[in-house]
Image (cartoon, rainbow, N blue to C red; front, top):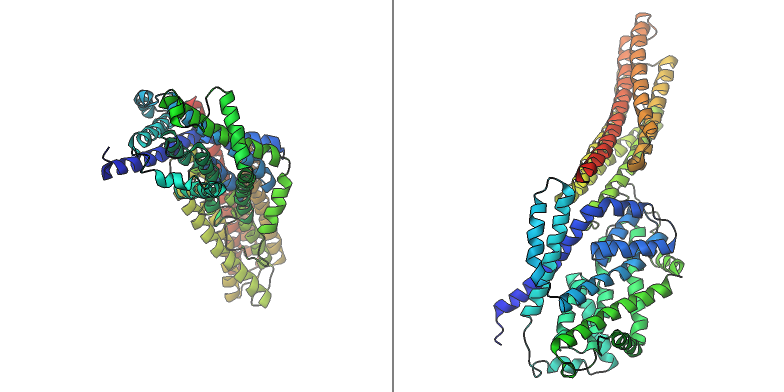
Length: 584
């Protein structure tokens, strides 16, 4: 067979199609079950067994341990899951990823999946034009499934038919005993780190083993190495994340690395166990030469099943041993990754990082959590502004507090921009209608919160102008301003309570926000009337009354911005519920 450069490009294209199909299938599933996955992880308990089960289910659904582990890192980064909880989910994710290898082994060898690929595409196309987003997402999943196996077929059809003489170099590397095992483990690690998919590595190695390029033991060594290589994706995702997220990525690496260490030490006895299980299932001895089998198909079944059993048993033993010591992982991670002393975090977002955009449908929660931090930071400005009202202008204390408010306002502007930029990147990826609705709602929320910060800074600037005009406030003015700020702070606290639990916010909390806004408006109107009377009775001059009303007006605007945030949350929740009803 003459193997041309075009054939080589077709082979590379097959690998790319396999990876793209897996990505499309995963995104389709995220859109179908994204909210459910978010709810499951948000409600995660400290029960390690439930965590393992959740990791298995999520990885089976997403068809990628890397994607599910990146998602776990994202949730740890967002504060929705503790490091201890994440360890159990990570353990389960490594078991769940074996499901993909079984799909490839069973459907890729025993069943001619190519006969079903185009019918699957034909069925999915009409769903793509459905008005219901759930059907569109289902169509996306089906097309991704078809592309995955089209890619696997191209890999199988376009690998070159090499003669034994041409493969002598592989035979040489595979006959060096234990050194060969280490070499092929390293090869598996390197390949998976490059393509960032252990499933793709498994598919390529399975084809190589089925064609007799490499012996069964060396194929399993590459699969073992792929378990280490697949940890690179969560590690990359943790760059720029908080310390706890980095620890979760380290826990994933430790699980796979230490599990691989014991397997390498007992490699040949372990392979003998795998052969015994494979033979016991009636699939034959995968270590025998192809000539010992009745036909190449039987040999392919034995090898593919043996590799899948190796992958599954390896991860199951790891799980059974390590599920009892998650606390050890947490202690080691806390020891290896420590926070820097006097670390200044005032200028950093707490939950959002650029490295965590792999599961956009789920990472929306990070922006939502960041909006809570944003609101809590801006709430401090309300207290600062109230304190500044009572601070004598021109003093060092006044200047320091004014500078602090100015600094907070600058940070507020930067936070709004960074959250908005993050959400725009999320929006650029494929999102469900509910996801787009949530992104739009959070963008409105951060915009209104930034307006609160602007009003607080406007109060500070008003006080500076008041001093320049040599205006003075009476005790009655100070008392009224304090009452106004008290109402505003109560409204702000209620708004933060709404933001902390958007999906389960109680109607009474929503109504409390509207009542507070009416209370603020009514008090503003009362103060306006009293201000005119006080000026007429010469309790203070007209200019003082102007500055007084400017501060009251800014406080009333804050009340408006707060209720706008609550309305945005209401729109998100009701819109999401209506969209779900339309899709059912």
